[in-house]
Length: 224
Image (cartoon, rainbow, N blue to C red):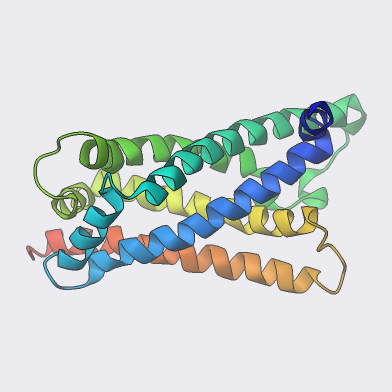
């Protein structure tokens, strides 16, 4: 067991864990988007409410285990990302006084720590707005009503959309880097990996963005 802990704590181990946890969280985003898009069905929130009740059921043991696992993975992914950032920064040292970041890295890779930090802050606010009150607390009304109220606020919707832009940046580099860490870094795979990362990020973030935009415009137009 000692060798495993030593490997995980090594530079290579940190990158491998970062890749695996990142890809798992990317798959979760895909599943989460599928559930959230039920909000756009014009049925008074019936489909989304049914979905939410199934997910929130205390008897749904599998979902509870997955949720706890996701919390652990998100926290570990964030902590590991910060450790890698400091490790990479320290490894460059003073030898890189003439280092030109724009020539040696992409904008997406240079903003990973910034985008990740703001996304983490957004997650805390998002969980405080929806998950904890409606899943663990005693919030009045349904989660569908809570979504309408939250996304009718231009400030909250604006912050949500800003976080999605940063999430797109994070995903573009994160997905590409994860596949490369797992060994798919041959030149013939590079164009596909880069293209897949961009398409995945755009689809995920555009899908999530459609929800606050829909409810914000609906509230501004006086629709119910």
